[in-house]
Length: 98
Image 1 (cartoon, rainbow, N blue to C red):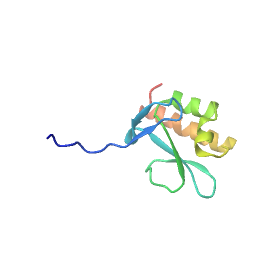
Image 2: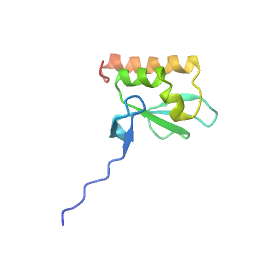
Image 3: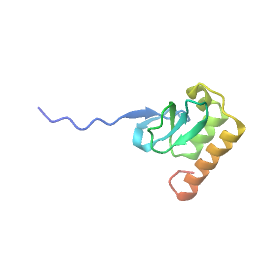
């Protein structure tokens, strides 16, 4: 019998609905006090949703309110701007597809 490989957690991107390894996605969290923030460590407490590092996924998730639905909250204009700024910074670092 062949040895089994290590388990790799898989999550679904709320922008494009594609499934990918958890480590390749960015976690967005609704904190216990109701704020929506990027969670680079993936370990902050609160309800989480995942997005690819692709700018189009971030735009789709915010434009169609998929992220708000997944987090079960509304996203303020300031939080929306902060999330898009983070996605833009990923794009400038070359970590994201255009």
